[in-house]
Image 1 (tube, rainbow, N blue to C red):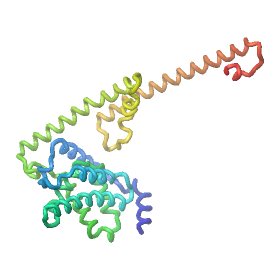
Image 2 (tube, rainbow, N blue to C red):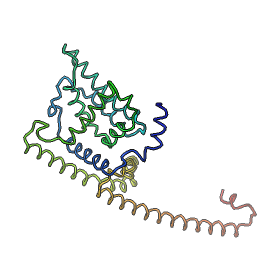
Image 3 (cartoon, helix red, strand yellow):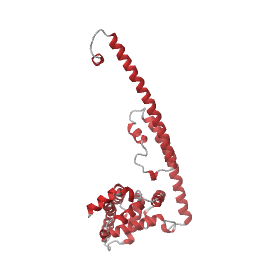
Image 4 (tube, helix red, strand yellow):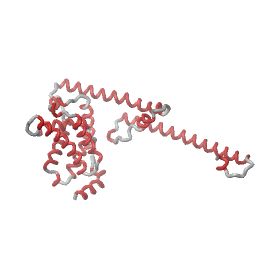
Length: 283
C-alpha cells in the first residue's frame, strides 16, 4: 500500500499538487509574510522560553522542514514534517529534564514550531500541507504523526493571520516593523540585482572571479515560476537579450574564423611542393 500510494501520487503529482490558483496565492501570501517577519521577529515575541533557544537544534529543524518541497509522495513530505517536529520535541524534553520539570506540552511546542517555520520559510507550505492531508492514507494519519501535522497546520494558520496582538505588540509598533521590513527587502532587491549582473561582466575579465561570475550568471536557476516578481521577469528578459546577443556575435565570429582557417589551409596546401594531406601540414 505504501509503494502503491507513492507510485500513483508521483505520477499524478503535477495534476494534484497546487492545482488551483487559490492555493498558489495562499502560498505566495504566506511566503511573503514570512519574509517580512524574518526581518524582526524574535523568540520572545512568541513566548519561546529561553531554555529552548538552542540554535544548533533549531538549524537542524529548519533544514528538515525546508526539504518538504523536494519530494512528491505524501509519505515523504510527512516524514520531513515529522523529522522537524521530533527535533523540536527532543529539545523540549531535554530542556524539561534539565530543570526537573514535567515534559513539555503544546504550550511550549507550538510557539517553537511557529518560530522554526518562520526561520525556514518552506516553499509552498500551504500546498504541501494540503497535499499531505488529501492524499496520505487516512489510517496512517494517527497518533504522533497526526499531532505533528495538526500543529504545523496551526502554525501556518497563525502565521497567515499574525498581527500585533499575536506578538504582544502595540499596533503602531507592529505596523512600523512590517513597513520597515518591506522597505528593507525592496532596497536589498534593488541593490543586489544590478550588482549581480555587473559582477558577471567584471568577473569574466578578472582572474579569481570565476565563482562569482558563475553564481551571478544564473540567479534564477533554482527559482520556481510562482516565486518570480515583475522585477524578476524584467531582469530575466534583459538577461535573455544579452544571451541572444552574445550567442549571435559568437556564432558569427566562429563562422568567420572557420572560413578564414579553411582559406588559409587551402592556400598553404596549394603552394606546398609536398603531397602530404592537409592534417599533416597543420601538424
